[in-house]
Length: 238
Image (cartoon, rainbow, N blue to C red; front, side, top):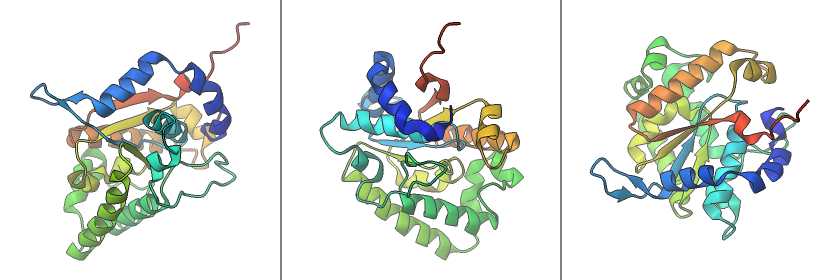
């Protein structure tokens, strides 16, 4: 089943989410221990990885758990920002802020001179190299002004979750503006991703997953890997 039928899957899966998963997410979000052993709040969650891997579904479930019915789920993932519109590829919605997606697209294009599907070898092996690749100081200043405005709005609705698969590439330039974030990387079998995507590319799956894992490690972010199959009902016997 495709990620993009997730609205129906969400309603079916939420009642049977394991208590273990709930405890892991909430503990990682609200009660992570720092290196000194003291508990430290983690109210900022970044969802990234490869598209068509269950990231929208994962984000919707995290947002629902963060709100726990006390406030609108939407404020947990978009604050007061405009939601990226749904389309025929994802009628259930992307669970992304439009300004975050636009900013990540623009940053990749400005820094690399290419689109989001083209990796420079140095950025693939070391995503933090993006920080040293700005062509003009004004570009970084413009990015930081936009990113601070977004994060300032989201912090009014903390704890929150922001999702864009392209954080796998841009996390290094967001990281200095974040406070002890938690990274969540949904993953799915590369063959299923390729068959579900217009890009039909296993290579791109490998590059995005590698970049997400490396970026999270370089940023020293606690990281959770979430299998797409965990959200699907078990197959019927026989």
